[in-house]
Image (cartoon, rainbow, N blue to C red):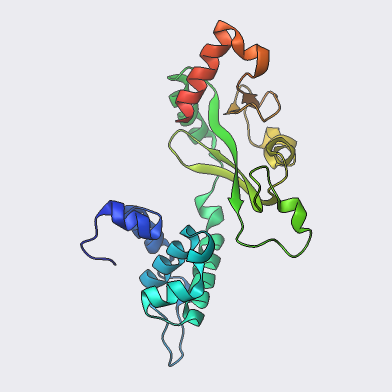
Length: 238
């Protein structure tokens, strides 16, 4: 796919590196959804994945079906069909790809974080908003976020090896990160996820608990010790 293209150019097109693209391709290429017995064969899975990732990486008019169809020399219907199949297959892989670490994995993560001054930390909690192209038809106003756009909120936990270990998406963009976190299983049933002394590091938008340690804010962040804590937390997150 895109032979001879440099990695930076490749990433601009499909939003990931060539290694990342091949990793996803190898995961999905043999899925049943890409097999059919009709006289009208599907597009190559590699092409279906590429056009889907490119479409997902656009914002606004660039995401139009016509632009993608002309770019790949296919019909608009093929773009829609391919994108739907790729997204469905990747979504079905979520339990395989997004997994909370088992005891051995937690120990490994906690040991690594201990070297950075945070023994027992098994991940970083953060929230992001994903902009929507159009206003949702039902209760659209609740999706209007603080950045003055319509969006969905995504909560995720990422560990120090850059793997996502927990994910919750679908809440309206106007909802505060702390509000959504309070409804996550991590907060409601911490004994199912954390051993004693284990916790997540996060930003000041989240509430303090035994399993959720935010950085200091306001007057509390001005002391020497707390400034140092915030500094090392930010360095670990990077």
